[in-house]
Length: 578
Image (cartoon, rainbow, N blue to C red; front, side, top):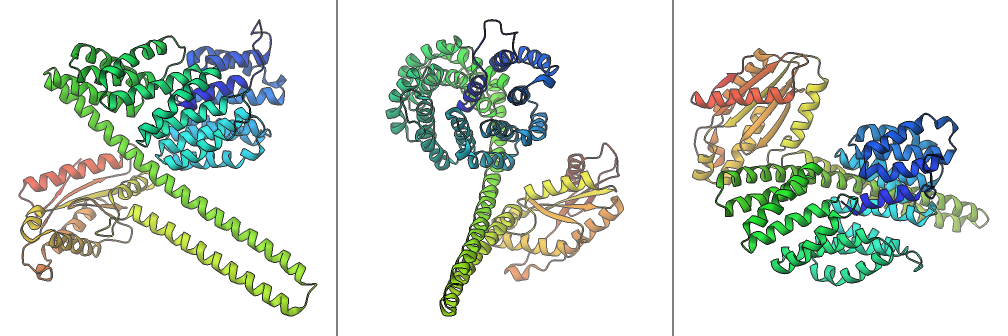
């Protein structure tokens, strides 16, 4: 379990008044119980909240905010993130207390993160950070900073995560409450391990464990110890790591909180036993870790445990099973890479947007300064007024130029992320996104054309990659000259291209494909410095409007038709028939 999840539960409980002897007597006591049951028994929490919902008309403002916060948290624990977003957005404007408002913003950020909408998650997090000076309680400030740290760690923006970690550590002003120091130090250890600075991380561990134990946060201390054990095994100290890890695993079993860190420890123990040759225990811990990762739906742990189980099965000589695990690991690894790419793109976009807003704020501040200066200079002579205004206008012009350059840089980044660098048509990701959107919104027939350059590898091998690049750029220009304005053209990778044709049928698409094929076949390659023949194989698929028509199905049908063209000897067009 990430530190942020542990803290979120603690914060929810801390927002409620102390536990009463009979928890059913007051609204606050039942809210307290619901918060305690959120992670351990969500059904009990749901039952309590359902009972409380009947009494909302008699709640105070504070009780209403507590109730909605608990309800949002329950939706999050149940994986109903879209509903959580709707609930928070419908209520957040009614929240006046900054401490509570930041809690709702955390719910919003966590939901968007779970849905893969990282831009919205970052925007919600930024709103929380801007409210930090208005927040009164220490636990609310820790909550804001921890949410930011966790989000930046998931984006692998470790420098930004360290900045917020230092801000959390600076909250520590008294030894009476070590919360900020405990959690900040634990974050510092985790980030240093992630950055590969293991010696620094290990040097901080002992003090961090002592601080957290003094603060009554034994579970945070347990997680820090687990990070150290995993590092021992990762660095090849298998026996030492196993000896230190087994007692920690026992401690996890005695806690009431499920933790991803326990699964991480089980997987590390499996690798430790594998490397010392104890395949029986390696398999035992590996299977447990693999099952726990699947139950928690944590993709990174699922990929890691699949890879470990593949290695164990390979060592046991069970190669077919090993290959199955390797296959699972590969699929998950690709999913992680795609998700990380989306995170990075979202992070860069929000970063540029934030910088734009900062520049706009700076421009507004400078304008206010100009007005103030003008009011003061009215009392002075005209010559001084002219000099001052000229200076300020020059300053504003410099800021405006800077702002324009920033906007230009942002536009270049957006174009770079959507365009294939060689051919300047849509890249695979942008084509897939736009084509899917076209299919969902278009109300008439749609067609997809796939084509693949025939024997393109032979061109590269015979005449070199520079000639191959010339072929791809020339083919792109020739095909573009045949397209309608509404057609979308993209390079899917290598020598494979795709055309999305809105408002078309199979006859229209077939005619376009034939024109493109003839145009490619007619290309004079002399300009490349060599003479050779070019041709391409085409696959066409068209589907009328209907509930079963999807971009994915049409793309697969076009791919089947392309395969048919290749099997028929290449340099031809095949149409998929429904």
